[in-house]
Amino acid sequence: MNADKIPDIIIGRLPVYLRALQRMAENGVKTTSSQELGEHVGISAAQIRKDISQFGEFGKQGTGYSISFLIDKLREILNVNRMWDVAIVGAGDMGHALARYQGFTNRGFRVVMIFDNDPAKVGLKVGEYTIEDTAKLVDRIRTSKIKMAMMTVPASTAQAVADKLVQAGVKAILNYAPISINVPESVHVQYIDPSTHLQRMTYYLD
Amino acid sequence: MNADKIPDIIIGRLPVYLRALQRMAENGVKTTSSQELGEHVGISAAQIRKDISQFGEFGKQGTGYSISFLIDKLREILNVNRMWDVAIVGAGDMGHALARYQGFTNRGFRVVMIFDNDPAKVGLKVGEYTIEDTAKLVDRIRTSKIKMAMMTVPASTAQAVADKLVQAGVKAILNYAPISINVPESVHVQYIDPSTHLQRMTYYLD
Image (cartoon, rainbow over all chains, first blue to last red; front, top):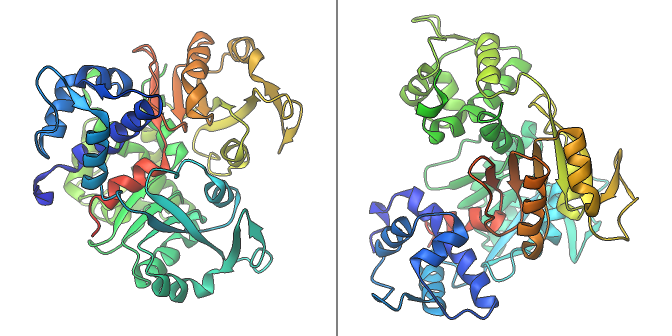
């Protein structure tokens, strides 16, 4: 497997396959085909076969894929056959929602701390977490060797927070702030901005 | 402008350009270049010029782009030179966060109603909205001619809710449920699943 050679667009589809396979497994299904998986995720069987074959020969002609085997392989490829600690920066509504979100279970992620720069929020509880002062973020994250963070801060402070996260050794940032951030090439960023997603659809509406 | 011929990947970048331009305008900047805009959004100047030129000749050699003019054009192209009413289905933590989210302001969207199927929640207030019974969703959305919805429901009910939204005439769904949904071709779907976004990054981490 050569990480450099696989287009990111393919990498982006693997978590969607994994999610569908995990759901099928939860429902007691043991084997599947690229055809059936394709119907679940809305992607053609040919595309799925092509994507998965980039990483090896995981299915058998005629019998299809063993779901548990393919789940194991995809978790290994995506490096989620382990648990990643994730910090949240920004304890507003979205930060609260993420801190309490059940959807990280079984996907490889565990929220371990949450920060805010508002003195009125520091020390308060969010679920099982106590909100910590953003001023302590670099030390706390570095000491805990946390490599991933979700930023739910206003656009106006997003770059400063991103800089702190990079300084603390974070290598992957999921940015909910509605602004693009600049980070070194070694740091990965993904964006979640509902307005951006909605605008991508209004283009097609009358 | 021929909607059929422009790849969706380009359409997906336009809201990011628009967001950056709106921020520059808020900061009092009047003109920009593809170079400068590219630095803000982390996309090459050549790519930006190519993307924008799909829709016409909006910049001038040497003087660059008038920000207000380009904002107007992008809002027109993305159909957000108007206000879209959006319904939220699912009044959990994420539904609450979206109902109170300030980031739709000036982006073309306005949350107008929120539904939940939990009798204990129906009738309660979320900000200025009263949570309505999902049983009334089809009638309410159809009567109000709402074309867009955000689904923040569990995976187990997502397809049933999507079917109702389609039945009600919704043409664009932003799906926060961690599952792919099947809708007719005329209905657009975008997905927001933090675990999927995080897994796309762990692939690249050690």
